[in-house]
Length: 257
Ligand SMILES: CC(C)(COP(=O)(O)OP(=O)(O)OC[C@H]1O[C@@H](n2cnc3c(N)ncnc32)[C@H](O)[C@@H]1OP(=O)(O)O)[C@@H](O)C(=O)NCCC(=O)NCCS
Image 1 (cartoon, rainbow, N blue to C red):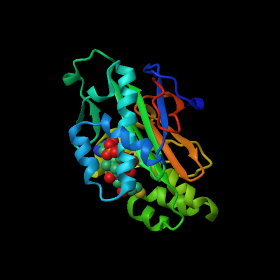
Image 2: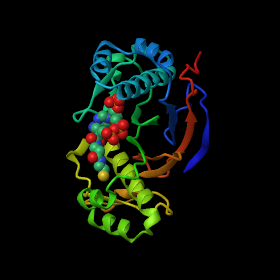
Image 3: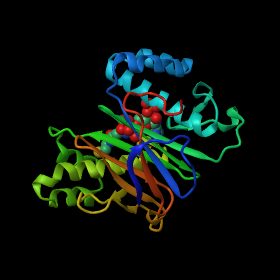
């Protein structure tokens, strides 16, 4: 359940197991606004930023990673540069508490970016996954659904009124991707091994997981209205989790200063 709609972020976020936070980050910053953010990254992240062939993915990565560092820095009461990450077995970034020697609650986070939109999701003591996708009206969504979705999801999509099928596809895609990202398994987890609600007029929900009939009710799923050009969803491995929505300053400045 969303407990507060998009509003300017107040840092540090107040963390509690019952509330997850989603922070909306604008990625269409001018060069002079985002280039200084590279200073907040570590050597490995800077090397990665330098390797992007195109400006857009570089900008997305730098802004999201620097904002994540600032956000976690305010929560952990440390400078953004000192935040330490490690990657899970399939590349999901996690906080490296051991290296940081901090006694803060178990903070879980996940990041997604698409076009001009970045989202950062934060929870305490529960896996969390988030996905944002820019609508692409030219995408062959029925073919993609046939190929990747569970058969019943593809049937549900075809059963929607034609004008609802594109949003239905993106509703399904973002929910499925949010689940995969919460689990952290990457695409080693088959997209057809679980089912979500496709109909964009119904509340987003995880309906079925192969071999785990009781597990879907342990999850909170929420679709997020982030812009007219994007679909987004968040999933938290906790039932009936409440969700607060925040806006990072649109000029990329640090709200903590
Ligand atoms: C790695 C993966 C998470 C990429 O997702 P994506 O939609 O391309 O990109 P997003 O912007 O949503 O997420 C990228 C962020 O997820 C995080 N991430 C990376 N690996 C992850 C993993 N295994 N689990 C969770 N999060 C992960 C990182 O923070 C990454 O951002 P960064 O590299 O800038 O730090 C993975 O799920 C994937 O490749 N999905 C394929 C998508 C697909 O084919 N979907 C079909 C649906 S029909």
